[in-house]
Image (cartoon, rainbow, N blue to C red; front, side, top):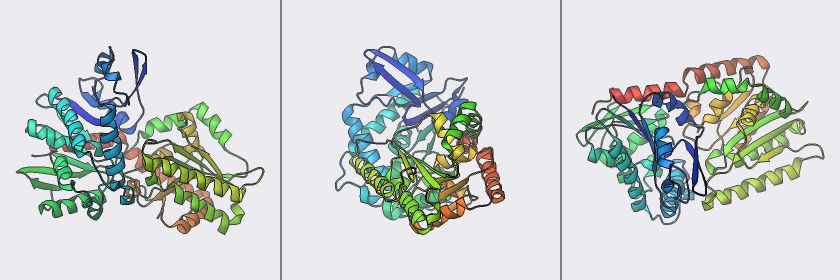
Length: 464
């Protein structure tokens, strides 16, 4: 019987260690949710790192038995490998590059041999587990070399690769000296998936310059090393039904009412604290709104949730300081004894509060300067059974290709975003409901389960 072997940087699990005891519980996440139906009821396998920064958990008695029961296999990373592979290369080089932030690149990049060694360890785990007929699905920028490394050992394997971040414009991608080596790694797959047509276009342009290869437009395939590789577009969704069910929970309804303030409209932003999310420009747009449209002073407030992220990377520590300084300046300029324009939370929030924020928002601000997809926009829509609320969405988020009934903005245009917030707050109820109905049709019709099904069907149909 064929199985699905899923390979991602992290396992969809939370591992906690107390002395010589280890506890494991499933963690939330779009990918884990989408694949749950696929892996339940058979002996499929998920391969990834536990997230344990000490590297000690993999040596604790009972861990591997617990993981096996959850159809998972742990990759061991030493603290030094985490520092180089995960922080120095994946988060400090590949992430900014894929999000058009070459200004964040270090002046000198070392550690590609560690990136290769860690990718080889993931590949070795796949090779050890693989049986004829299995499908292998590798995920994201941390594991760009895995498809090639598996292909070299198992030429007949059926391998899919999905890139969850944007593939960058070739002019940016070509700043990497190892560009050819990375693309060759991806081309070990039979199917490479992207969120949008634009990202696939960037990839095919890089292929053209690196190898002189053109994509066959009729079949969306390329020929490389005497093999055919399919290039597909698969916009990722969310578990819309699950979010809708959560939104109807009584505790969420109570929390939603608590977030509402009479006479005050609510703007909401929910992001990891990452320079790709456009948080600074969003704050400046609010400042501009209150300057140009003073009628909104004391009548609108922003709740900005900034989930801590990659605090060991210097660029992220600097970014946090910049954001918090900006919040302080704007509140200092406009706040009154009874009102502040920005309520800033530097922490994750419980699911009940998250869904309540989606339900309470008059305007949801999703304004990244670059984002592979951005599932927050779709989660917001899934929670709005009242067919109310307005989504302001960056044109540079992958979701903008689908959610065309949102208010689409250029996040670099601070004045334009400010005016769009004003328009969204002023939008008549009938138009709000019409737009939200269209958005919900898309989000529910192309959810995470459709995404998984479409990719795996395309992988099965891919012809080497």
